[in-house]
Length: 383
Image (cartoon, rainbow, N blue to C red):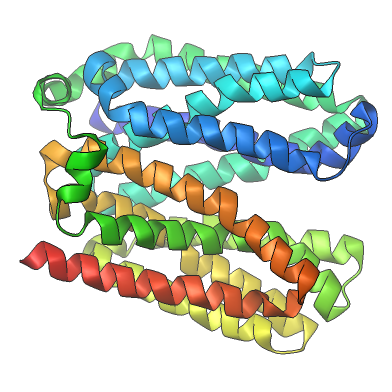
């Protein structure tokens, strides 16, 4: 029963990853249908991220009031409805409106499930949890590709919405499994609400938030700009750049699966440093003026990034106390989305006004800042 509940949580995290790569996969077609500029994808992304940040900050109150299982069910329902809404839109502004419930659903479930696994399962299970998010992001582009080939982009969103409703049905049928950890429900409702001010007063938390923001800035910049970097600086064709740029996603998914086998033995802090060091080696590879080296470098960056976020989250109850973990993890999710939302566009400005070749420098800055902040967090928690 204990492992069956974990399987249900993994399934819920697949539902979290499924929609994340749909917009990018279909945007060239969507913008043509709606006759809007290429840059308007950023507007929808920011609306979704804004909702995610808000619900991440509210997750502590929501989880304490409704419990993890109910927050999970409501969140999956919101994303399923929003995805179906995307599938019936006829105007661009409608997509923007449907982005609100999608973002609100994603942030709450992210924080609630991350905290639940951090409290009740080992570090390897946290790595595999995030691996299943990667599975969702890998599967959905193929669904959208099939829809674009055989019908329209709206059918891609509709298929994924049906999958979300199917996952919702499984969650509803398996509600009794959540009774396994009875103490969790009691703890969620009885502990005091920490809040943002309370969290920031805890030694080490501000450092950790900056570290996670730095990590997500580097990860998201790599995700969004890898293909452009290969095309603009290494002479790859558009098709090659799209294919090789996606190798980062495979690297991060495979890396999280492999990290699960060693994370419990080495410990969270060691794995974070090891992963960041590997990512920095990947950055060095992409700095070499050879296409093959850059391609390999993006795979290595993905492998290095793989265990960092899961281990940061899993170490939170140990570093700051189980009673504070839900509040802190909610703020962590908000901090993560700030990094992933705003830092890639800043690099876009750098690329436009200076050069795409500065990408390795930009990534190295954030990875080094992550190492510094993790060290400061560890020192603060020892005092």
